[in-house]
Image (cartoon, rainbow, N blue to C red):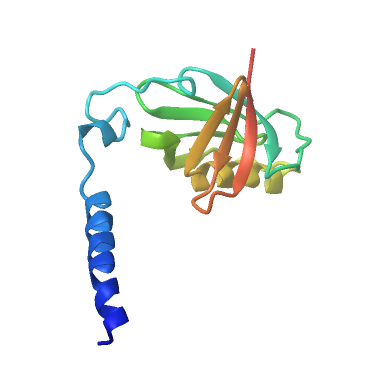
Length: 153
C-alpha cells in the first residue's frame, strides 16, 4: 500500500463506522404506525377524505366519479378508484413514510378501467407523502412524484 493509501485508511474506517451506526435498528420512535398492535394512527392524512387531482405531475383524469380515499385511525383505507371501490391497510412511519397493502377492489368493468388502474397503482407504489395545506402528494421509492390529492370538503 502506498503512503497515500495509508492516509485514507483512517478516513475510510471512520466512514464505515458512521454508516454502520446509521443502519442500526430503529428505536421506539421509528416504530411504524399501522394499527395492528392496538396503536392508533394520527396526523393530517388520517380521518380526512382525499380527492384525486393529478396522476404524475400533470395528468388529469376525467372519470364519472372522482377517485378518492380515506385512512381511518385503525390503519384501514377505503375509497373509490373512479370505477371500483377498494379497501386495504396503511402503515405510516417516520419521515412521512407510507405503505398501502392488501388492496382489494370490486370488479366492475367501466370505460375508464385504465385510468382506474393508474389510481390503484399510485397507491400501491407510494413510498412517502407530503402535505402542503390542503394538498397531498405521493412519491415513489425513487422520489418521483406519483400524483396529487386534495382534501375534500
